[in-house]
Amino acid sequence: MASSYKNNDWEKWSIDKGDYHRGFHSTSRFEKQIRRKRNIRNSIIIGSFSLVIGIITYFIFR
Image 1 (cartoon, one colour):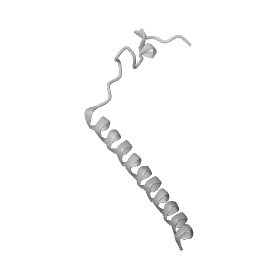
Image 2 (spheres, helix red, strand yellow):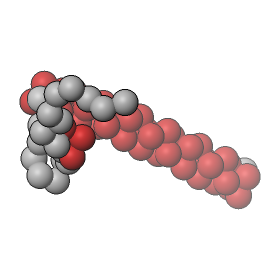
Image 3 (cartoon, one colour):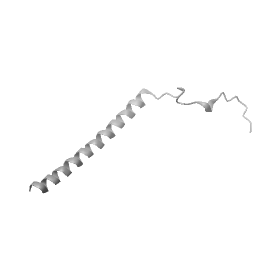
Image 4 (cartoon, helix red, strand yellow):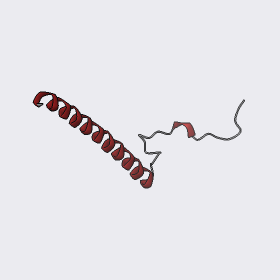
């Protein structure tokens, strides 16, 4: 079925051409979310590492 209006290349947009721009507030919120996830992951890794080292030293030096 043919369209009655001219398309004007509406489907041919791309991020590389700069047709889409992310808003500043959504970008800063996204970066905060990434930082929060990274901090949580690092805290879990450091806590687990400390726990393992503590258990190993307990069994070695008791």
